[in-house]
Amino acid sequence: MKTVSVAYKNLLASEAGSQCVCIRIITEDGLKYGFTTWDTGFDYEFITVTDSIGSVYFTPQNSFEPSDTSSSADLGVDNLEIIGVVDGLGGADLSAGVFNNAEVTVFRVDPLNLAAGEMIEKRGYIGEISIVDDKYVCEIITSAAYTRRNVGLVTSPTCRVRRFCDNQCKLSLASFTHAGVNAG
Image: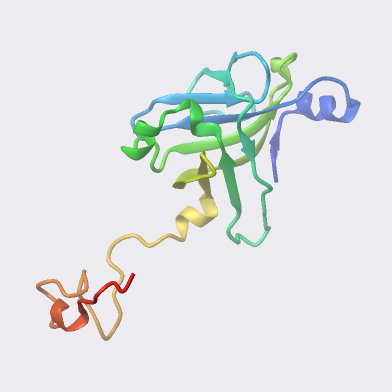
């Protein structure tokens, strides 16, 4: 179920007004980033959700597009990718891991009537970031998927080592290595 203010529900029912998509990113260090599909920037603070983040400035970014989302009512894993949004963030910060596990909220507002509130589409965390066709692609891991990830060591009854062929492992890397000649 989406979180929507009463005023925003009325706005949707009247089919009046404008809508834009916004993406709020909060890093683990508390840095705030906001992006919007609207043509001018604006400050916005959530109305329907109480959090300690406060107001965030949303920069116009016509170069991002949230992918189609998949949702289920049975706590199945939702999925969402955001393509191009991180162009405004910088490749060096992405490579350095500044945005790993950053909190992400995708929502809609009427930028001409911000007092109407927001409709939150998805909340989650940034997962894998990759570059496809000269665009950054951020995988958004929703809360349901985030709780299903492995934390700590994963072992099996037949093998309890942390890394293949390390000091704890009884196997030798040399027995699994083969030198070849490139015929090219």
